[in-house]
Amino acid sequence: MKNDPNYLSCKNKECKKSENGKCTVTTCSGSIKFHVINIRTDIEFVFFSGGFSIPCILSRSTPLSFANPNKPLYGHISSIDSSGTSMRVTWVSGDNQPQQLQYADGKTETSQVSTFSQDDMCSLALKSSPAKDFGWHDPGYIHSAVMKGLKPSSTFSYRYGSDSAGWSEQIKFSTPPAGGSDELRFLAYGDMGKTPLDASDEHYIQPGAASVLKAMASDVDSNNVNSVFHIGDISYATGFLVEWDFFLNLINPVASRVSYMTAIGNHERDYADSGSIYITPDSGGECGVPYETYFQMPTSAKDKPWYSIEQASVHFTVISTEHDWTENSEQYRWIQKDMASVDRQKTPWLIFMGHRPMYTSTLSVLLPNVDENFVKAVEPLLLENRVDLVLFGHVHNYERTCSIYQSTCKAMPTKDANGIDTYDNKNYSAPVQAVIGMAGFTLDNFPINADSWSLKRISEFGYLRVHATKQELNLEFVIANTSQVGDSFRITK
Image 1: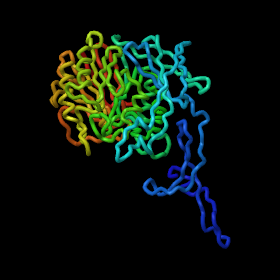
Image 2 (image 1 turned 45 degrees about the vertical axis):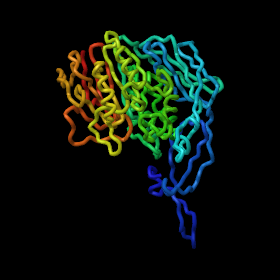
Image 3 (image 1 turned 135 degrees about the vertical axis):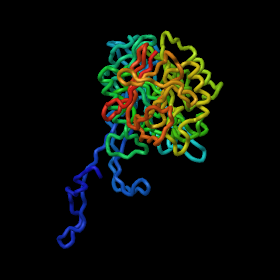
Image 4 (image 1 turned 90 degrees about the vertical axis):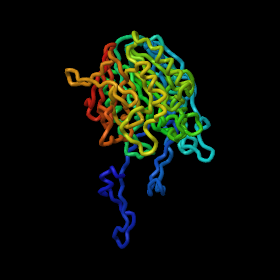
């Protein structure tokens, strides 16, 4: 009620009790607006006092039902290979029957239907996880179908649903450029989550997510984006499953129109006794199951969420920092093989992505932000395979390094005619690394002093905007609230 001035000023006063003609008890009425999305199950509004520690229910509404709990919603698209000719569409519905994906003026595909249950969530014997217990919410049914026979770098439209469950609106989308072609424009960031679009308090709020999404949607509207890479800490549902629906609703203006590629983070995967390399409770018991159901990337198998894909002149190697990356592990061997196989004539740029960083100036209160064992195991592969750019999240700010290896600057950028830092990879020395975990979660501050390898540090919400040709990478850190460029740099060959 704190956001209703009429309530705070008691404008709408009502006498509830009188004595001797004088009002002794009055109440003040007000209103609250809620942003509600279709979560398929009935909802109630509960008015209580005492806060979350000692709640006392004062009043509650009757249960309210959605007019169509089966309505197909929250569709997003992703690439299944490097051809630019096939795109996966994934959406949510309360209907377990296969639905239709109609696209490209007359083509139709039937959806594959999947879901997950409480039994699929992780938990400990002595203490239930949120996902297994009070945070559980029925996810409905996740539908997926692949559009085929498309043309790269082209615009089409699609809709999904059925006559019985209803249809989505007609959505215009663009395919990414095929691997080996010249020009690519993509956005990248980590650690987004969701911002309440009302005055609600949630268990975990990411205050910058809505402003970042709005700024990116403007970029997409301008037809200057081919794809998006969201590198870990996706929804921050962390065991409160309904929040996946709110996240999918938030990203829909972007993710329904361009290829939305993801990497797994600690808040999707980590839990004790679940196979994650870190045993923190950060996923709330989800253990990667909702993430891999909602975001089906071109991986080799379930719970092996690493993959590579090529778009135009860029080869992307996307890893999981939450699964075993130690030397001779399955993922380590895959990283070796994948990067060694890159045809640099076809895709001259090699970009390496994951969630937890190798370098950050930001200190952590609890666990270290950088796992030195991870750096020791994987960083040599980056140098050996002449990786051009490394992008990580996990730390909630923006930071750019020199050309770095083993905490030492192997080369420094020079200023071009416009004063922009330019890294000369014709004379390759080491990768440039950037932390881009500033897309939503509460920002992390930088210390007063930083190591000499840290060239740029910004603690504001935003995203990375990249333009790649076969000759150069142009990169800009965009500040969401103003759409101004906070940092720009180039890598040339």
